[in-house]
Image (tube, helix red, strand yellow):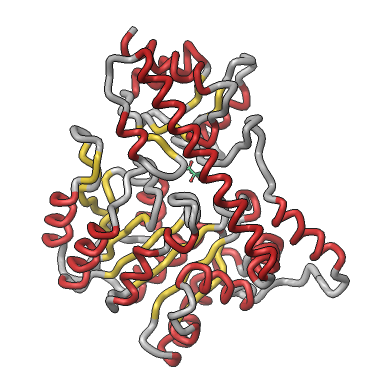
Length: 396
Ligand code: LMR
C-alpha cells in the first residue's frame, strides 16, 4: 500500500550531519550542526551538569513518574528567572516546559494560531530553516522581513525597520534574542531599542527565540537584555527558551515557552490553553533535562560554576573565530573581517552553495550549503586545514 510515498528530502542541517557520520575520511570536519565540541572535537558534558546528575542519582525520592502536562513547575520558575531576571513577577508569566526550543516554537505558534488568529508571523531573512517549517505547520501565514545585508555583511537595520512598519498592525515578529542563527549578526542594544519601539508602535507581538543565552557575550544576563528591555516597554512578549546549547543538554530536549501576561488571572487562562495545546501533541515533557537545570539553578554554588562553564564555551568559540580569521588573512585576498564581527556559535561566511559542496566533496568539511560554519566544530588541530580549504575554494 505504500507505493506512492515519496522519498523526502534530507534535512538541510541534520541530513548533512548524517553524511558526516557516514564519511570515513580521517580528515573530515563537522562544522554543520550547532553543537558545542571541546578542544579535541568531542561533545562536552558540563561538570555542573554531571554534578547535578550525581545529586539526582543519590536522591532516593526521585521517581520516573509523569510530569504534569505543563512540566515541572519548579524548573519552569527557574527557567523564567534565568530568562527574565528578578524584576518580572512570576505571577505574570504563563510558562510551560517544552521539548527544547523547537517544541517551544511549535507550542507557541499553535497557541498564536488559535488565540491571535489572522495575524501573519514575520521571520528574519535569513533565519534557522526549521522556523519556517514549524510556523507553517502551526497554520500561521509565514512572511519575511529584511535582516541581513549580504553586500555589507551586516544588519540591514533600515530595511528591517521599514518591513516592520509595513507589516499589518498586530503581526507576530520572530526575533532571535541573541547569537542570530545562521548569520551571527545581532543588533546592538541601541538598534534593539529602535526595533522594539517600532514593534510597540505597530502593536505587533514580539516572539523571541532564545536558543543561545550565554553563548553570545559569554554572559547569560547580558544576552537576555533585548527581551528584558521589550518587557520593560510593555511590548507583548512570547519567549521560546532552549537549554540545548547553553547547558549542553541537546538530546535531553529541555526548554520552555512563556507568555508575559497582564495579571495573574490572565496567566491562569493562558496556561490552561497551553496545556490543551500540549496534551494531544506529546502529553507531557521528559523529566531528566529539566531536573538537571532545576538542580543547578536552585543551588547558588552550582549556578556560579555553571555560569563560568558556559562562559568558557563562549570564550573557546571566540578564540577559534579569531584564529580562523587570522589564518585566512595570511593567505586570502578577500576580506573576512565580518566573521570576526559576528557573534555566537556560527560564522556566516558568504561562501556560495557551489563552494560549500566543493568543501565537502574535496576536503571532507561538512557545512550547511548557505555558507554557515559552526565555529564550535573548530579546534587547534583543524582550524588551519579549514582555512586552507576555504582559501582554495575562494581564491584557488
Ligand atoms: C543548528 O542550527 O544547527 C541547531 O539549532 C541544530 C538544529 O536542530 O538545527
